[in-house]
Image 1: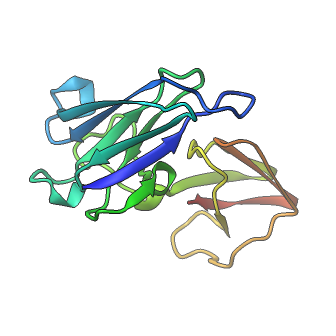
Image 2 (image 1 turned 120 degrees about the vertical axis):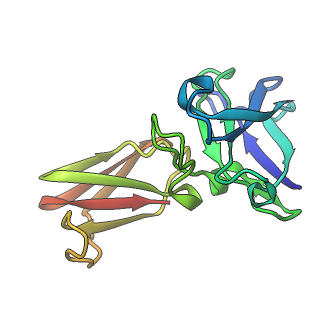
Length: 186
């Protein structure tokens, strides 16, 4: 069992007390259940404390009998809250939720999480001076930008001229000249 921790804050940065966070363990094998997200194996509800922190003790996904399981964390009871997919490691440590994020493609249930470690891939197919990256990670990510779209294309890292993070779900990169390529956020 590992502990997963997150803090919910309001617009002024204060912790949001007594918010119920719902966590479901999902097995994505049966496409006929729950309109495509998979079968709910277990459900847990935890409340935030006076500082807005919630903690949940969860079983590591590698210990599950079913393959490709993940936890769906629902923080939507808080204003501006979101739903997050995470995979929990098999250890007895405490982990920040942002470090456990995974990507589950919308409408895809059979494979489960496809990109471990909270990585988000952004593709800018048309050359542009500004890339608006809607990563939805919930924190300011590390970004690696690569020029070109095809596999095996130029793998040299690109350097942007400015970076803005208007919120914890979006990053804006500005380039000196129009560029097409990919950005990996983690």
